[in-house]
Image (tube, rainbow, N blue to C red; front, side, top):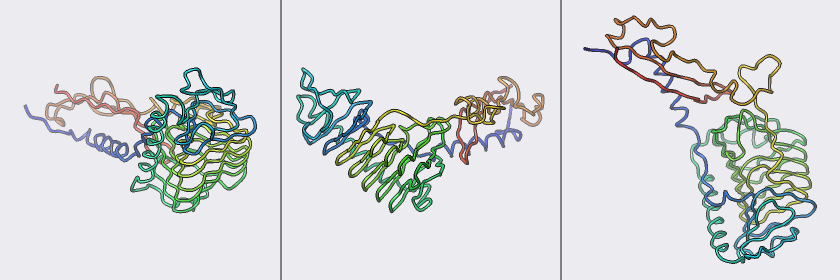
Length: 330
């Protein structure tokens, strides 16, 4: 018994699946933070706060001692391995606390530095010098971005949007400084996650008054939160972090949408209602849609069933939701 593969009526589908697989293979892999990812704030030179700051998550510093954690009114735990503060929902660690904290902090800082080197060294950027570093009112698709100069959100009250799904990754390589103007904000759409947005900044990082930012900030130098600013993600600085009535790890600006939008629901749909599960589906048994199941001559005696092939196309990028292809002799 002989048969041809692929049959002529399935060749276009197989080509599409291979193209989708290539898109997935070309996506930027995430950055491994190691144990540095356990911290909302991590620094080498200390953390200072004024005003009523709120930090949701653990905070730590090393190799400097706990005396560099100022403004938090620290209370040392009975174990002497960590301290607490009314301003921090989590534990606070420093290099001079009791064993095993010194080793824990040495490892975390090392992992932070390793993550910075990894992310900063990623080759083959998808976008170079995009908008000459002016990100006000821009929407960024997933990928690797590279700038050789300063990057900013310079317009007050403007937005920067990250549009992608929960598996998409953004890496932002910035050779200069990064500044977010007062009351500017970063917005996540389509299910994008702050934990998959990596800012790799060689210069100083400053968030203006009442601004809001999203992502993992790997800063070569210092990070400054000006009065009333907020951030969702992790803030990992190789020098110091300064807070002024800031909120860390809360107040995410996130919008989801359905595609195609339902009447009266544009911009309000729940993630997954349109982007997942709405792609074309073949029958569980028998031929693909539009194909004569009895056409044995064209397949030389071989029948092929497509169990599922779903995909979504959005904002100039392709996201594969599910692809399963089964071939069987009839």
